Length: 157
Image (cartoon, rainbow, N blue to C red; front, side, top):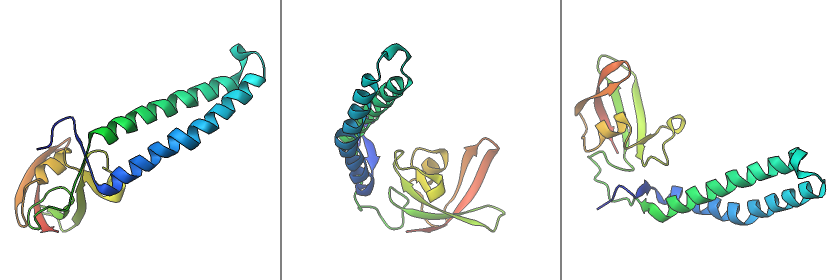
């Protein structure tokens, strides 16, 4: 059972987060420390733009490290245990709007992986949530800013 505190991600996304975290903790922290040391050597810190910029970068990097550590700790890695004919995590779904001829293809992913440019749709988005558990040929409706939209599932893989 997945809890609300867990973040659902694919193995690929989990590995990507771990790699980024390791890079930030080693390479990036070292670069920032060198930048801070250099900026300190320039003298008066109260009017030192390089120093302030390095401190801001350090703060942003440390925040990203904290966020990634939390995500990695809470990650629930999705396995390929999906049923081929039912929409779930990792499913590729092709849908068509009622009355339209264009189809749209999406991959259902966890919220951390969502990327509409890559057609990766979060399971908690309005469309993603409406798709979960549906089958090929199911007709479903979901709420959008322009009102209710009705679609048909053309394919689930």
